[in-house]
Amino acid sequence: MTDTTDTGGTARARRRGRRIAVRCVWAVVLLAPPVVLWVMGAADAAQHKSPTDWVGNHRAKVALENAALLIAGLPAAGAVAGALAGALRRPPRTGLWAATGAVLGALALWVFGAWTVVTALRNFRIVF
Image 1 (cartoon, rainbow, N blue to C red):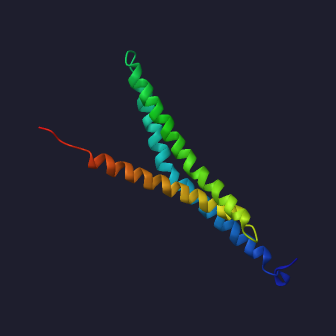
Image 2: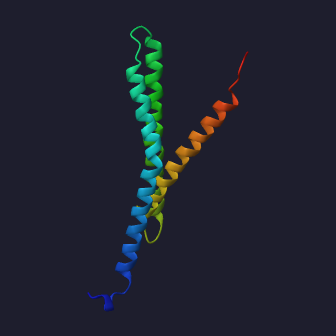
Image 3: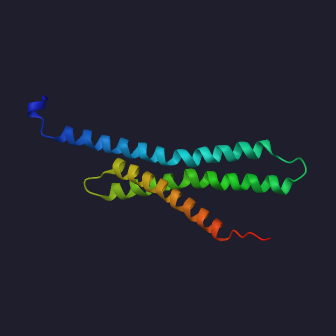
């Protein structure tokens, strides 16, 4: 098939492929700072592990596990929900909707992080 006889189907498929790639790149860009912060927190917890404070070590480990679950889970849940919603459409657009769901999951992670910071600052008190 030459470009002169192309009915537009391959051009649409290429545009859709580019949109999927752009959304996947956005998801990775949005996830990079939380992943870097998690790695820095894990390295800090490993360096400052107390030989006597097992409760503090356990709390640090649980906090890191919960953060890892959020960082990996929210975008993955968004991608799964998007893929399911895209599969129900006619014509199905599973890939595009899954990539959109991953971006929305990464944005939800940022909203949750901002809410956590605001809540922590609201409860911050200086006592003299």
